[in-house]
Length: 479
Image (tube, rainbow, N blue to C red; front, top):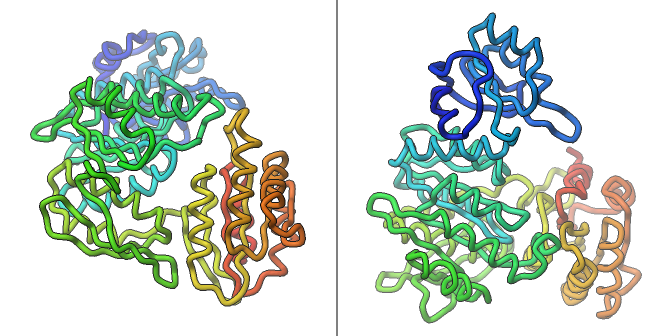
């Protein structure tokens, strides 16, 4: 956990000491005043609904050694700092986000013993991150991103919460706009990064898949080797932007490129992949110059094999024994609401993948639905996808067309324009109108559909988080 002095923070961030002593030290940093304890630091943000600066005094009363404000501090806060011996710092330009990045970057520099592994990509980041934590954890002490702490605030918090004795930090790196991964990489300074794929997530912000590829490739700018680990970028060989990223960004920066998956230049790939009745994939992991390794994942779907390869590519770059790493990876359980298969007594089997969605991840989830054994109906409950911009209608129609080609007995669509576009795409490709139901929200869908489902049915629940389809899954499961 981060432990620094106020003077260290001032030097790293260019902020201003408003009250207190620069020699004051703190341990731990939070952005939620309710989580602040004695000796910690609290960073106040001005949010759309809540102004954290209003809680500066209460954070000091809770024992905070340092409060960082992004507005004029109140007299109440100043008085509390004087009375309790705390310090108040005003962030440079009142930019709490940049303050967090610079502070975490300074803490990262104080811990050169860490090897940071970055995980980014349009689809599969969290699954690959969890796989890496399990695989690397077979041989090294690992600290990994918790939950969805993968943005401009989440990454600094991940770094600042890492124990000093960690050997490898597995850091999920998300982004919505160009420039964000450059800032994240400058903070984390990863030695090894895997870009799982370049899809269509956030195409509304980035304009095109090439724009997405360029934004993902920004991570290269902050990469640097550590110890005996060379700066290395793991790319999926058959992704159509891998060569672009390798030749335009990684190679000019002196970053080694490792390719995984089907391709002549790949260092490892999978063969003989099969799915069992629960959709769990078995495979042989082929490594150039080494004996094959067999494995069966505890996560359903062929797409999981691609994530496994990305993770094992990082394992290869870190020179970690692969047999133990693969065994640990195969034993991991799915994260909540990410292809999580659930069933209670008397309920359908639910494939809960409601955490997030993109057109390509919907297709992969539908493949899982159609690969598992089913004595009743296969039901797809699909919500519209956000952040697709001008491409939204076309991509939603393509999702609908893909659904029409699958063995789905009932299609439940949730949302507004996106749901209607999926409906039209499915109908255009011959899917029966009688098998389509459209609802404006998750509550309406659950109220109508949950009562007609049986324990023999298999139900896929998939959407962007904003749609809230986890409530549908909870209703169906009676939980």
